[in-house]
Length: 604
Image (cartoon, rainbow, N blue to C red; front, top):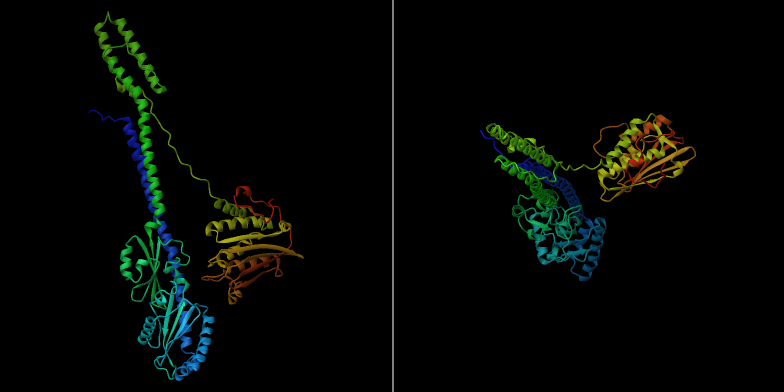
């Protein structure tokens, strides 16, 4: 059975496509798919946390205003002035009483610190009294009708209106929330108040009007759409103008399956905050990158095929010439000779071919006259030996080197971690110089900045004359860790951590100061207790361990103290004895670390 023959160039191209191009294409596709899933997952986690924060913030604001409205509806002074107002017909007296109303409402304006208005409806049907500290608020007659209807349907309760922009938008598009409250139904005394309306601006709702995106949002309106859905399922506010006043169920259908939809309730008003993220726009950078990769791969395949064609063409042309000459020799013409080319392997074949042809021709001439029949047989044998299969068996295999992409060097974060770990394991003593401690602290802070990003600044205010002093190794790290993980947690602005040192008498004083949220006063007393399981807050394990270590080494004279100012920050102070440090250097040189130099102290 004849063995199937293959074209060398086509076989090589097919092998490349199956063994290299196709696996790379599948790998790129899988990487792109994983990247898309990770981007969507990360976006969902980030936005769910932000959405919950916004919902809680809005809910807290609404509850605070509900308490103010409830307090105001039961204000005896307001009731007395209201009764006087409706029982007098004198315009002058009512004018005087209006100042009393203004005084009462101004007190609540100062208390709430909100831009808004109070609208007081009287039992006798008199024109409502409006007090405002924001000129952009104007009530229309239809507004009054809406509020009195709400109060009538919910007597004795605080109810929020689903109309969030007063006077048909006359407030310049500012999101205004109005709540309606009426006196209890079974009140035992006359109040003179029919209905009280409280309207106020909620800054957290600005992202739903298209003026700005939600608080802490990292996405443009093309990616993220925000909706405030009322109790009846209608869209009250949105940064997508086409969704305004539409049923959210219909809006959800229009968004389709390509959007991530997240919802959080606002308990006080019965509303729902909804955010929809378009995954197609979110993953567009990855899709564009994948398109470029596919184009690059297509270009690479085209160039490979073109190169393969040219490369094998330069080889096969001289090889086909030798094969053609072999066919001439096979027909009995021994005068042909193979030509030489630029390839040493093929030149060797040509040389062998020419030598064999010459040998055949010589042998043929010598025995032609004597052994014509035998010579004919031998020539036929030689002809058989010179067929293309023989030459193919003498060719050397052609190999190509693949271009292998080199991986980047190990990142600086790993080196920083190696510095700390190897230094710690290599030490025979527990005392190091202040300079050495600060070097390790720099490495630790560098790792934390890689982890948390540029969310805080780290400053070392150290006099170079103190760098030679000794101190317990790795004693500042837990304090800086507490400042990063707990002192600066929850800040919406970049924080600052300052490490400073000073000496006086026979003591070395070290301070770790942050400008974070501080520690509640009632929690300070328990910070140095033995470690106990805690859910959240300033960790007790690091502080108790640092104090215990200092007391064991130097006695109770030297200690750890904490001063905290809620909302302003925390200062942790270490008091240590003055002592010299043993000579010690990190086993990993600083210049190999790659951590930026700090000018707070000189390099050794």
